[in-house]
Image (cartoon, helix red, strand yellow):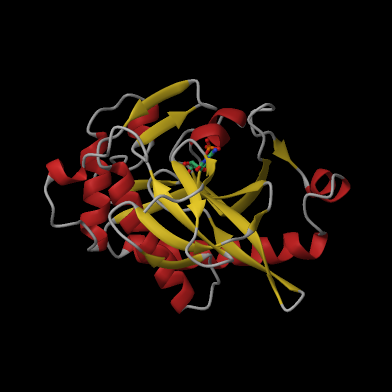
Length: 253
Ligand code: C5P
């Protein structure tokens, strides 16, 4: 069935959904880093992230954290609620790594005294700058009440996911969330949107400290596909199909 393509991002495509108020989220194998300066393909990533994000969003829904996720449709697609994306990336950090370690000259791996929440304004042109509550409210990207709600939700997600990953031998170092506004009976509700996967989380093996996430691609560490597969395997969602079936189509129809 041909569906109307509404938006194409770096790692996903959004198509018109089967019913009003729904969208189909298609997961590509494409990977980008450093504001798309680095581009590549991670074979099977779309299939794995579709499963991993399905699993995580389902668990979060079960513990009362609302998300846009409805159900997985097939290997690379999931049905989601159509939301108005809040133009912020909400990052939660438990351990110094990545940009944080660089910005404050802290050794990667240094545990933080408490979870730190940061906001970045989603803008490719500006390179997703770090912003404060003042910027967010002054520019009207979100109201202060919405921001409070997003922080509360982000910290609940952090508590829940830290435990979930710890249970499979992974340390949740940091992650990025996106939120969307859902309108129901003229009431607005904030829900988690986008995806939660090794593209958007830093996951380190508890025993070896090995990186099991997109940093393997960002830093050319090798074993990228294997790391994504291992995360899926530990969560119990590795598809039975072999690597041949994980290959993506040449182009999205
Ligand atoms: O690069 P940085 O250290 O700020 O990343 C923090 C966390 O947010 C990492 O887990 C990274 O995967 C995620 N992130 C993301 N998308 C971005 C920037 C960061 O998923 N555009």
